Length: 510
Image (cartoon, rainbow, N blue to C red):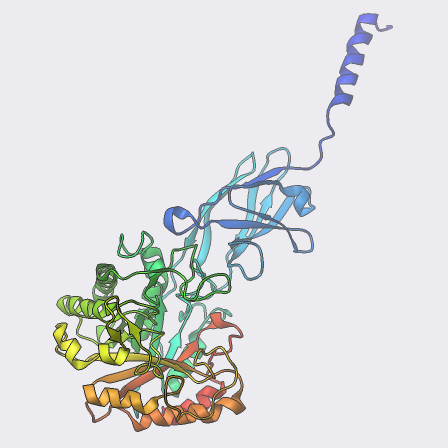
């Protein structure tokens, strides 16, 4: 039957309406609403969208939306990595994630794989029909290892060892560089177990473990409780593993007398910021607060062998005014003794605590009083400050063997006998120890990659430490820890491995 004019008009209107609609492709929005870590979860991950060649095509920042299908060049699937700070290979890798994503809103997370041997995870992950990605980044615990080789008694010094760095790196906690002694992760490239075991078998009995103030206290210097996500998952298993093996473990507040804010400032120096970064803190109560809380956690842990814990109060103070570099640390010593800590306490001096500058570097107080580390850290001043038992107080100095004592060069100075403002002043430091009947430890020293230039000076320096050992005396060197070990260093010029030339030299003294 022929269609009426009324029907023709209605059909034509429908056809015209369909033609007027936009052509729908396979685009679907994705919004990054993943929760992060740190103060108020302020450090959030990027979703680094990949194309079919696994190249990053778009860095989806926290809170941002994008047409993910178009960016990934795939109509139904979006593959991505999660990273902190951005989407370059230098940014902390948090794992691979796959999304089923389409314009019908039939969205789900197809898979998530955390990085191997790295203790961080994307948990409770979801993507809704509108493309909103939710979930949270959480640090996950490294298992303590109670089967490390046992530490040995030192031949020339009480303490002979290494630094195991990584807990203090970056402007926010980077899980890919955290020291990992777990047996569960030994096959991972992020494991330190094999190297640590070799060091111990070679005779190392001491490990210095740098930790960061801004990771321990998120609310500010001397403010709030310890950030347990950092301490329980990363710091605690490291201390448990080492001390259970009777390894002397130095807990180092790696702070430069500065508080570096989580996610914003580096602890130490970086290419992007001041050297050192962070805010100078001269309030003694702030240092007492962090050490009181940190020591309480250590003291209350039955799996940490208290007999093998040493406390390094603050790493490398710089430009600290008046006598604060001394008075703050003596305040902390008195507080720790009142809390019952009976072990060794390490104190550090102004101007990067340099051995070479201990007696020569001077600064003026606000009233014109001249100061030096040697004049401040005297037996008489310790006793006036209430620290009358100095038997377990160690003067902690650092000494690199390159031209400006910074550790940034690959070659070394050959003559270690120089004196004066720019000299090594080795004998002057020993004279200071003898005059004050004090003992010292060198917790940072190191040489660059040029073995032909540095092997001989390193041997000379080790002989100096041996000739002035505190064994059998009331002054001298109680030990040393070379800088530095740890998988997070990569090709860093001062990295030491069990096979490096530095260990060939040190082996003679272990």
